[in-house]
Length: 303
Image 1: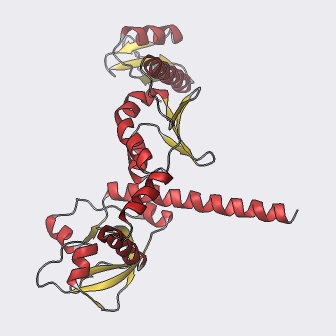
Image 2: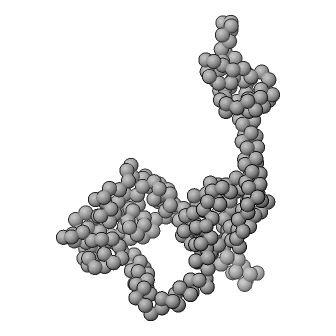
Image 3: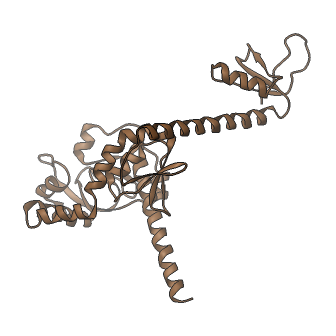
């Protein structure tokens, strides 16, 4: 709370609070109607409202104005959708939100996360997007729909059948087998710190140990990154980080340079940590959902 002195007399400062408003006539007019005792202060370059409860009353009024603005933006989004709707089996227009239900795809998750105020509804297994975000939803919808169609079960099955027995099929299986080994090549003389968030070409990991086993350059080139000439690599074991570990990790001050990228590991940046935290949160929700379903099944079996 700030106090505004009376410049016309040497009286004590008055109780009150100040606020800045957008420079539009309608907002100022509504503010003056809500606070008839408000006065403009040239010294503070703000509106001053007298009274001991002024700060609380101003905060409540600003919250109401913001809510009205959100409602107006939602109505505007609804009108835009009604005029030129997105017609898709993956999108449903609800009373207050768009509901998006698609097969899982990393592309879809990344696209929707860039839409303002989009959120995942874990209970209903769908994405919720407010109408006020319709413009961004429309801009990203072609990529979302294309990825959804590509990841339909029948489409994925058809692709697997088409490449079965081919070199591409063998390469895909080999990548999966290698990933499951939870190992990563690091320079023998420039290894990463253990038990902290480290970014790699395979994502963020927490390295746990290395026993000095040499990594052949052909495997490094094929599954990880281009091996540097005359560099000796060893295998390091890794694990995924918990949400708590990722949240408490302090990000690197700068992005990785060329030398760090060629080395194969670097300290995690804020953007990388944000993505990893979202993934960890999704894994936790999925685990909690499975545990809840298992508990419900046990209860049903043993009433």
